[in-house]
Length: 64
Image 1 (tube, helix red, strand yellow):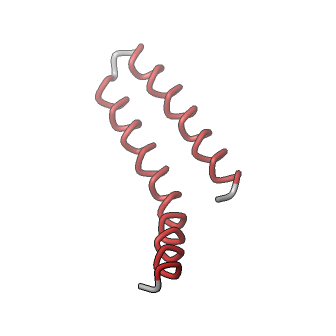
Image 2: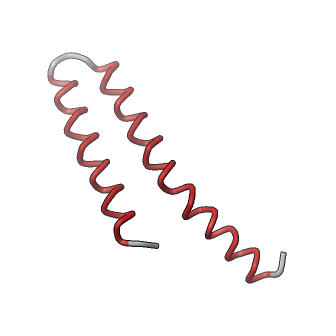
């Protein structure tokens, strides 16, 4: 796993948390929920490639 992937996910987390705080303080709780959900989706999209590599490594290791 590359360090840049961890930094990207951390950056997404910081951005999402800041936006959620701003939206919650201004009374827009529903939009804050959408921002949180969007951040989770973006992070999972970034992780899909790494998960695929992990599955391939496990398959090659055990000869499946």
